[in-house]
Amino acid sequence: MKNKKGNVAVIAIIIVIVAITAGAIGYLFAMTRTQAPVQQTATTQPTTPVAQTQPVVQSTTPTTQPAAQNTSVDETLNWQTYTNSKMGYTLKYPLEYVPNPPVDQYGAENVSFINKDGATFNVTVDYDLNGGIGLATDPTPDKDSIISGPSDIKISGVVAKEYKIKNSDNTTADYVFVSSNNKMYIVDNKGYNSNDVIFNKIISSFKFTK
Image 1: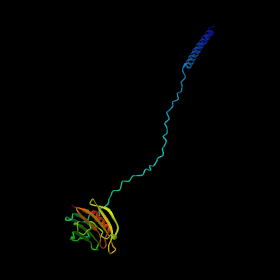
Image 2: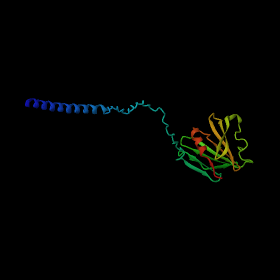
Image 3: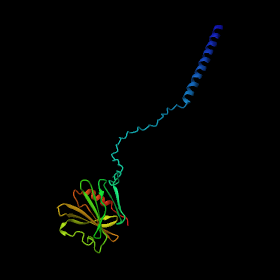
Image 4: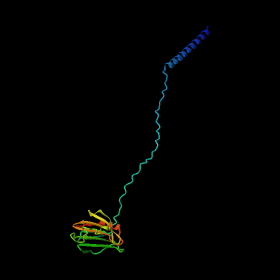
């Protein structure tokens, strides 16, 4: 009887242990079912746009060059200056030319400039317009000698007449006639080996002083 009671006690303990274990397992299972499932949240990273490489365009705009400066030189800068206070004019002439003393006759004064090669130019002033040498009214006595002209030019701001004339020896000469202060001024390059370029520069330097 005593062993029988002991077996019953053991069985009872086992039953209790089984019951406790079953209860614990059931409790854990129930807890697992009630927990909310963890959702995996996908994190979307912003996509950085890839910068596109733009083609390099070479400029074809032409470069504007600065305007060229005027570097012209006054070729008469080193020339001599001749001034005739009596007749009221001044002009420049090349260094190789020498002015002769004025010659006064028939109501006109003449100054000749000559170089070593015989090239000449002359300044004649007819100051007696009522008589004199008559150049004021008839600057070219022989009309058949005119090759070209008259052409209008300006001397010291005054309109002048320019002629190309054939001389009696078949050479040619330039004559410029200009009236100022009741006088007729005649500048010419009549003479041997005359130079038109030099003559034109002399004319451009001619100024009235009265």
